[in-house]
Structures are given as structure tokens and as C-alpha cells.
Length: 176
Image 1 (cartoon, one colour):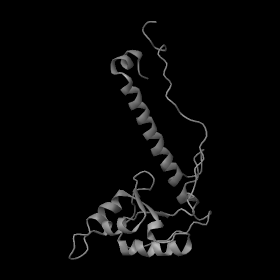
Image 2: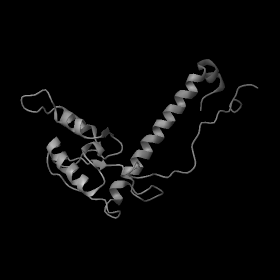
Image 3: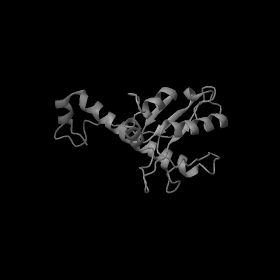
Image 4: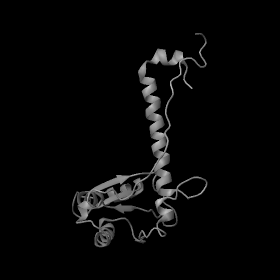
């Protein structure tokens, strides 16, 4: 709760900051639920939990994250989907993957494994809340490859209702 006095002293900037903060928190929770949701207690079944039931192919790479290892998966993804080339494939990775690949240089060049990946793929997004933290020994991480077929998104998330910030200048006011 923010008092009327605080709103008057700070101007419209405070309300906009609260709205941005609220939107960020909702976006983070929604991303986590969409990809990692368990499907119980009102939470949607996430992409990883429902993959096998929905016919989504999962492939263990069992290798360090390199463009060569990811390229092999991109080729497999292209042959099984409507992607017309690596530029049509989109990838979602953990920041730890970026860290490892961006620190690995191709011998004799100033080009990193990450540079090669981002130059070839259509879009690469990093998220620390949509994908689970690396686990195991050695640490293993998951990634997602998607494409759009004829401009249609790879999946949709239906949401109902909304959360909004209600501005009530009279409740909890000291006077008036």
C-alpha cells in the first residue's frame, strides 16, 4: 500500500514504477509456470513436464554446449519441423550456457562458440526463470528450440482475468 501523501510527494512516477514492478513479477512467474509448471495445485503443466505426453521430442546431447553440438540438434529439428534453415530456428537457453560458450574461442580466431550460434540461428533468448538451473555432475542444462510455421507461434498460453493496480486516494487517508 502506498499512501496518498506518498503519491502526492512523488508524482506519477511512483505509480508507474509500481506498475512496472508488478508486470515484471507477473511475467517472471508466468514464464516459470509455462515452462516448468508441475500441472498440480492450479499450476499449468509446463512444457518440460508435458513434453512426452504432447509428442514433443526431447534429445539428450551429453556434451559440452558448443555450436557443433547445438547445430546437430538444429539440423534434427529442421528435418522434423517446418523450419527452412537455421535462421528459422529460435533457441531458449540458460545464462550459464551463454557464459560457457562466450568464453570458448574458436582456435586461432577472435570468434566464440556463442558468436557462431547467434550468427546462424534466427533468435536466441536467455532466461534464468523459464529454464531450471543446471543440475547434476557434471552440470547439465536444458534448452528449447522452436520455429514458427507460416507466422504461427509455436505455442499459445491462454490467460483469463487480470491483475491491476487500483488507485484509491481515500482509504487509509489521514483526513478527507
